[in-house]
Length: 193
Image (cartoon, rainbow, N blue to C red; front, top):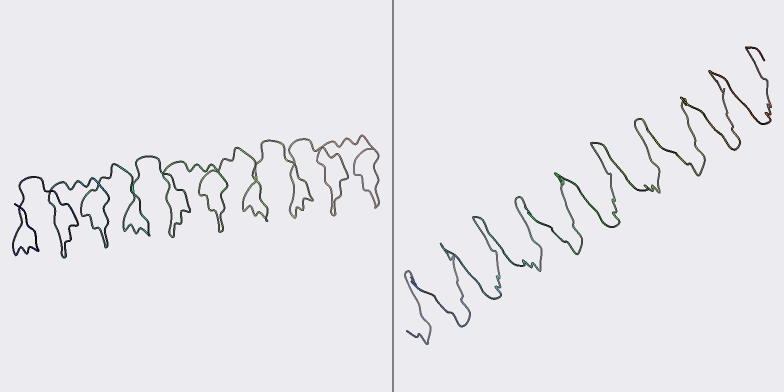
């Protein structure tokens, strides 16, 4: 049948077969769909979309404004963000975080476990280590190293330039000096010379 003018239904509208709407469908109150809703073209929602159960989107989901998720967002495949990702609360990553470009942290980076850096690490500000620094390879210091505590060297110490100590220098084993030695103060030798 064809309805030309306005139609008001005061009770249920039940359609047993396919329904083709040539223009806008406007629903002023709640609408319940108990089966599959298939939309072949664009869908414009002027207000909230509430989904009580699982929702599956097989194509692209494009959101032009802010999106508020009250619970978990689970993504089973790769995710690409073309702009900023802003996280206001704690973030828990169960596996590897891989960053292909520069990363800027404006606050503290706290790492509870081991940290492995396979490339160069450049720190432009002061660095405070609360515990032991263990270096297995060569270490190059481009500026002055100020050490306020004791230094224990278990192997050879090779100094290519000047070595200056403002306090006592204690050598527990043999000391081999191949060049000239200049002592500006008193020298106390307790053993044979």
